[in-house]
Amino acid sequence: MTYQPSIRQQERIAYRRGRAVRSVLLAAASTAVVGVGLAVGITGAPGWERVKESFFDLDTARKYLPQILEGLWLNLKLLVVCATLALALGLLVAVLRTLRGPVFFPVRALATGYTYSFRGLPLIIVLYLFAFGIPGLRLKGTPDVLVLGAAAIIVTYGAYLAEVFRAGIESVHPSQIAAARSLGLSYRQAMRHVVLPQAVRRVAPPLLNDTVALQKDVGLISLAGPIDAIRAAQIGVAQDADFTPYIVAGVLFVLLALPLIAVTDWVTLRAARRQNAGT
Amino acid sequence: MVSRFTPVALGGAALLLAALTACAPADEDETTATPSAAPTATCDPASLKTLTAGKLTVGTDTPAYEPWFADNKPDNGKGFESAVAYQVAQRLGYQQSDVVWAQVGFNNAIAPGPKAFDIDVNQFSITDERKKAVDFSSPYYLVRQTVITTKGSKIAGAKTLADLKDAKLGAQVGTTSYQAITDVIKPAGQPQVFNNNDDAKKALENGTVDGIVVDLPTAFYMTGAELENGVIVGQLAQVGVPEQFGIVLDKGSPLTGCVSKAVDQLRQDGTLAVLEKTWLADTAGAPELQ
Image (tube, rainbow over all chains, first blue to last red; front, top):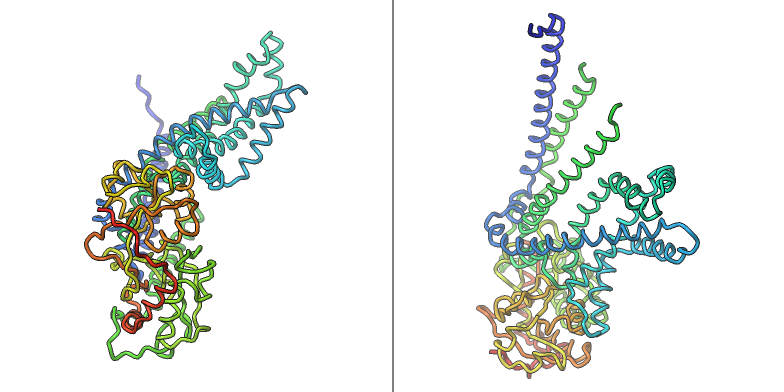
C-alpha cells in the first residue's frame, strides 16, 4: 500500500511549485534589469575606455601575477602565524581578566589596561613603533622586522580577541561554575572543562570574523619593508602607471577569504541550529 | 502570496536603468585634445585652460623633501623644484601670486581620472609606461640613482656592483630608485620597500637595511644634512635612456605644449643651470659603481 497524496494535497503541491517557479522568474528578471543597468551605466560612461585600459588590462595582469602571488604567500604565512598566536594571546588575557579574588587585582588591571590601550591604538602606529622603534634601540639579537611586524599585529589583534573571549566566558551562566564546583572540580578544572568549551563555542562566529579582518590587515606589515601582495601590486601600478595589479590582488584576496567566510557561515548556522534545537 | 513590493521593485529598477543611461554621457566636451599644442598657440593666462581661470595650480607631495623644496613649504620659491615651478609659471605669464599649490600624493599624480593640478612637480622620472597614463613636459633635470649607507655598514666600502649583491637594500615604493635595485644591482635577496624616503632612512639608521637607493641630490642632502655618519657608496649606471625628471600633466592636457616650451626656454637661456647651482649641491664626486 503506497502513500497516495489526496487530490487536495496534490493541488497544494502544484500551487507551491507554481509559486516557486514564479519567484525564480521574478528574481531572474529583476537581476537582469539591475545587471543591464549597471553594465550600461558603467560601460556607457565617457571615461570607460580609459578606465578599462588602466584597470582591466590583461597583459599587465599577466605580467605582475607572479610577483603578486609571491607577496600573497607572505600574507598567508603571516596570517597563519598571527591568527594562531593572537587567538592564544586573546584567550590567555581573557582568562586573566576573569580571575576572581583580590589577590589577582594587579593581573586583572594589567590585562584590562592592555585590552583598553591596544584596542584604541591604530595598528599602523603600533607597527611603526615595533618595526622602526625597536631596531633603533640597537640591542643585540633584535629579531628581523618581519618578526617585529608580526608581533605588532599579534599584540593588536590579541586585544580584540581577548574581549571576544571574555564576552563568551561571561555569557556562561554562573550556575554552571557553581554546579561544577559543587561536584568537586577546582576553579581551574571548572574553567577548563565546563566554562571555556561553552564560551569558545558561543563566540566562534565573531572570532572567525576577526580572523577574516586580520587576513586583510597582515598586509600592513609592508610598511616595514617586506613586500606583501598589495605592495607587489603597488610596485606594478607605479612601474606601469596602470591600476590592473590592484584589481588582480583584490581578486586574489577575495578568493583567499572565501573559504574562511564559508567556514564562518557554516559554524554560525550549526550553532544556531544547535541552540534552537527542539523549538 | 504576491509580494506587494514586486511592482515597486521592478519600477524602481526600471527607473534606475533610466537614470543611469541618462546620466552616462556626463557633460564632457568631445573634443579630443591634441597632446602638444600647435606652435602658433598662444601661451598666456588668458588663453590657457587651467583648473581655475587665471591661476596655475601646481601639485606636489607632502612632505616636500629637501633639496627639491625647503621647509616643506613649496610656495616659498626655495628649493630646486619650487624655483623651477615658479620660473615656468613666469614664462607662461603668471604672477607669483597666481601660482596655487595643491597637495598631490606621488602615486596619485599618475592615477587616471580628473587631476587636482594643472602641473605636478615631484621628481617624476619620464618613462614610457608613465607616458601612457600622463603627459610629461620636456625634462628639467638629468638624474642619477645613488646608493647611500652609513659608516660601518658592510657595504660602506663597496666599489663595484658585485659588492652589493648580498646587501639588503631599500627604496621608496613606486620609484625609479626601486627599479634601479631590481634592474641594475639585482641583489640576491628581495629589496625592502618603504612608503617614503623618511621610512627608508629610518630603516638605514636602524640597520634593518644595509643601504638605500635615492636620486643623487637627495643622496647628497641625506648624507650631508640628515644622516649621522652617512656615506655615498656610489652612483648607478644609467640603463638605456638617461633618466630625466619631467613635469607631469593630465593625459592630453591643453597645457603640455606651452609648459614644454617654457621648460625648453629655461634650459636654453641657462636658467636651469643657474637654479641647479643654487639649490642642488655640487653633485660631482660620487664614484660610479660598475
